[in-house]
Length: 190
Image (tube, rainbow, N blue to C red):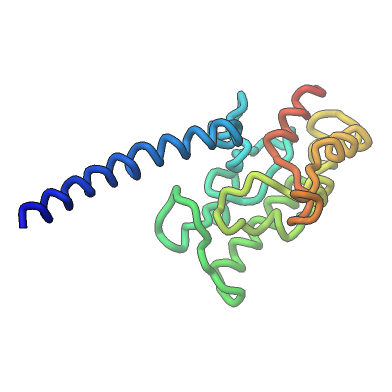
C-alpha cells in the first residue's frame, strides 16, 4: 500500500513539475522564438495592433464599433448582456429592436461625420475588439479624413493601398487594414 502511495506522489510531483513549469516555459520560449511580435502583444507607441483602438477624431480612420469606441449606446457590444468592458458579442438577433436602434444610431453617427458607412462600420465583430477593417471601410472614410487633415483623396487612397495586408498565405481570409497602423502612417504624413 505504501509503495503505491509513494509512486502516486512521485508521479504527481513529476507531472506537476513537467506540465506546470517545463512545458509552460518551453511554450513561452517557442512563442518568443517564432512569434516574438505576437507573443509580446504587438505593442506600438500608440497601442496594440491586436486590439481595436478608440479613434474618435475625424482626423483619423475609425475601426468597427467596439467596447472602447466613441459611439453612443450601440458602441458597447455587451450592453444588452449587462456586462460592460469584456469582449464578446451581444447575440442580438436580426429581429431585435435593440440591435435595430443601436445600428440606426451608428448610421446617424457616421452620417454626422460625412461618411456613408459600410455594414462593417455599424456592426461589431464576434469579439467586439476587432483591430482591422476592409479596404472599402477605409475608402468610405476618405472624405471625412481629407476634410479634417487637408490631405488629398489621392494621397489617402495611396496610403490605404500601401497599408492593405493581403490574405494570409494569399488565400486564407480576405485582405485587411490594421486601423492602428493606418493611423500611425497617416500621422507621419501630416
